[in-house]
Length: 245
Image 1 (cartoon, rainbow, N blue to C red):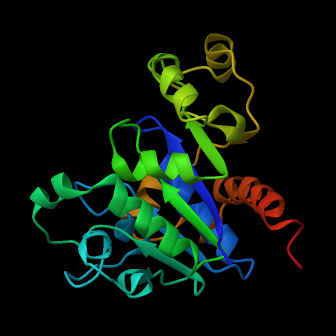
Image 2 (cartoon, one colour; image 1 turned 90 degrees about the horizontal axis):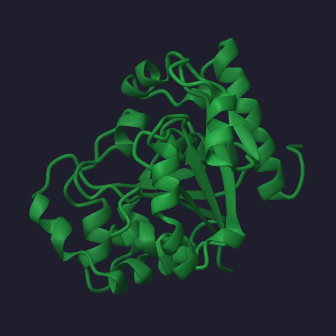
Image 3 (cartoon, rainbow, N blue to C red; image 1 turned 180 degrees about the vertical axis):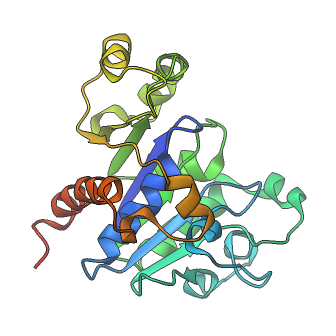
């Protein structure tokens, strides 16, 4: 049975990777088998969030380029989440490989992975030419679009309007606002961008510190992280069809 395919999208520095990682943790915490695929073809970022290293015989490029790969073997198990597996580029590789990623190979990978997991998450890219992000947006049944209040966010939103229309993304978009650290007023931002937000995430002061230490926000116990986790749990409720038992 194919899994739910969900893409997390947004401009660079919108908080989308933090959201994707921690939503994956929240879903895995509900005994769902979760796969998480990075669209970053330049360096491996997901392993940083989980405090792990990806060897050359695993990872994204192996899954994309081998003729008949056992896709599940290319994923890495996330340490604290026994039901969560992630796919990212290895720690050491040649950057020339990113030029050889085709839409066909990405579609094959996502379709194969969707047969292995209950929920497959794609951590998308603000770059509209990214093949993993673009294919994920096309195949997904839900797209969580992250916005962090800034002067450039409304410009990005306006700039992707044609792309959203061409890929028929609008009907499956769920808008999420990631609160900034006080540099930009939230209400002013809402007035500028003229969007309604389904969810609002609180600012977590130590998020970067936790991520660099390989600890997802979802598992850390302090007030800011608990508030962030509550939003993720609400989203998980809706995706999984009910509250955690």
